[in-house]
Length: 420
Image (cartoon, rainbow, N blue to C red; front, top):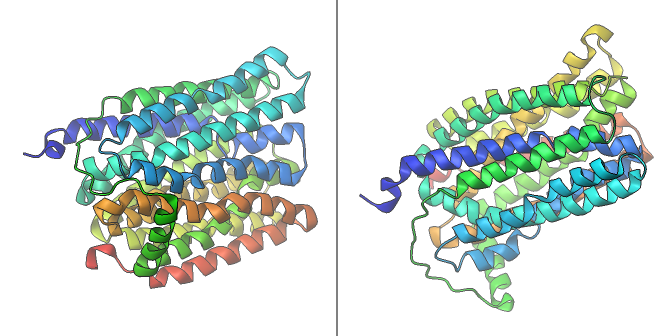
């Protein structure tokens, strides 16, 4: 029995616990609902609201190419995850502390502290994720990875539904005043992020020999370019991801559109969090089944199709507004599709990369994929903010939908890795 088989159940449980606590924690500081709502309490300048999503996307994705060169040459990846997470995950405690101490006297100071903490957390977590995904691919075999994703995402969905109820209560009329209400949410986020790290500490990482040593950048970067030239499927999945990233043009503005244009109250943010969770829960079950039955190509295509839901629905609600009694529940469908779409980014796109990557090149493939994807994902919310500032919500939603349609066309050129 190999070391991987011996500790399979333990590692499965620990990584599921890690995933559930992490994603539930992030529900309290959601980039699609809570954070845009918080920034909108201080300013209605659309590019600044977009920046709140631009920073975590870019800071998480762009540095991963750097991490890949270091992680790929290490026999043990676990110490990288622990050290970087220990530094990054308490960052939202600092935001909560600033809110509790200063109150609403210095709103722009709160915004500055928030942006600094968000940048630090996202950067450190992005660096750690290269090692985390490499460990995942070693301890959870490809043939059972679909059930791992489903188990993690179903449990996450149930826990995050409870988080959505808490968010609704905290941000509702009976909750604490601003900014203490958001401070309570950020405190909860950091607490669960540290619980997630505690679960990861019990993972037993198998140690394999590493054939490749860390390379000088003048050698490493040209080698990455050769990987792209040589592997057509790596190029294709990156092209699909880059076009799908245009879906992020509108991501921070759905909640603002609901509250400012449709007149829904701040308490609807909790409903939107729950709807996003339910969407992810339903999709994760379907995608886990599809992943094991049909492979990551099918899941990638479904992910892009689901991404079309939010801009199309938001455009529809902009012109044909639902009755006031059902407005919040109707608009929650936008976030239902957002949650379903997000479930596919790991089960579809990332799993596709893990499947096509040679084991010795896996950190390089992950780092290359995330950094290239980060170039547009980083800029998209900010560009969406400028587009909204200069045009209108219908233009923003229509542009987003067109980008996703182009991504869907590109998925036709993907080949299922199991058949390669």
